[in-house]
Image (tube, rainbow, N blue to C red; front, side, top):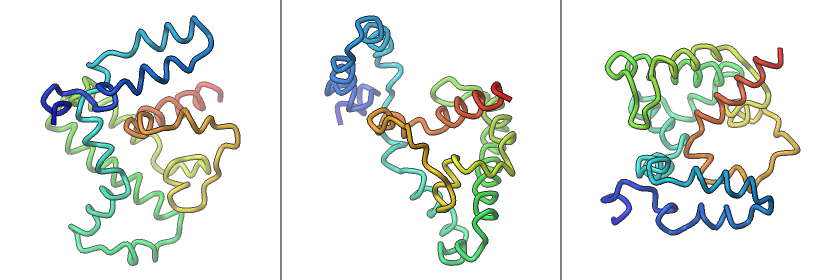
Length: 169
């Protein structure tokens, strides 16, 4: 309740991010990490978002539209991925129509353009491919890095990954 009132993630208040910084051995990297530990980077909205989770959110959207997960799973895996991608774009189109920026200060039109750019992409390393059981997991991922903090900002991780891939090509 205090975290919500202060508009800050409970993990920020409890020192989780400071503990992570303390585990970084390199002095320079530890100092850099600490410089980003600011309450405005960890608003309560991220906690609320992580409590919902993508799977629950997606299932609720289908349910509210009388589509069961069983019916959804009758689609071939590639079509399920495309459906998820198109659903994200359709929702973001409505949001971008009414809001220029989200609560974290991100441009909704830039987010929409990014989402539109990956429609039809069946990258086996993508989050949606992994959800549909046809994805691959990168063997060298640092599992401690992909914790709740990272999951809260799923879109940012995807954006960074796709930008890097596009820069490499």
